[in-house]
Image (cartoon, rainbow, N blue to C red):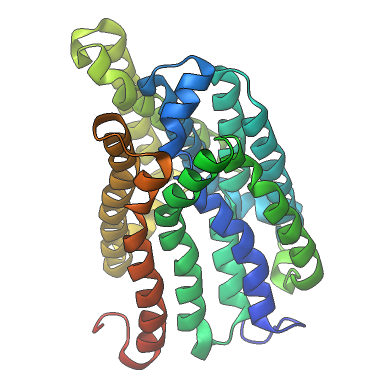
Length: 337
């Protein structure tokens, strides 16, 4: 069915429209990392407390992302995509206007919820818009957003923080989001199987236990070193709740007819290996872009911009490599490459 339908405009216009918002969403996973000392100082919080600005966003992202497919079918993909960008834009303004750390964290949770669906929606729209022969190149463009954005985020955040204020690391999302909404309204259409599809029932039990498991796990990992890990009773409770929730989530998803996360596809070896490799990549890249700027600023006296610039070379290398990879995949195949 996807082979018969073709978009009414050039697919590259569609790619530009959906990648604008996706780039900003992924950028926000790291753009505030260099500004954490300034955020903590301005809002009267410790550096450890300020790291919740990053982690709250990522956890909210992870919880919403699995539900994006069902929500897109329920509301219509184009309408849902535009709504997510609007939520992302409004919450970005609330982040910049926050006058306390709890308000900023709440706004970041909302921002993560709005941005959580942007990556999978952008990827599916691009795959459907391009003919098979050009999908490798299209995915390379998508890779520019999801790989380079978190690496370039600290540099942009450092420049905005040093030049104006840490608040502009969030305000910058607003004009880009407005342009993205305009372009998506103009160029993107829902294919027939999206318009005519029925969403069915959402797996609310699986979604609830996944949210509970990930949320408690995040608190455990973030606060454990401050309270002697399992030497504190409430940390043991958190660990137990998190483990029980995630185990029940796996059990439930393998038994329910329409799971929120289809774990059965991990039987496909290629998919399982790819997910494992991307997990390792994510652990390495987000660990570096979070800890390195803080280390350079707090111990070596770097400014926010200088700390951000130390992260940039990785992004430059990834940027050029992705275009080469996109061209080579079509000729060599992914496994051989």
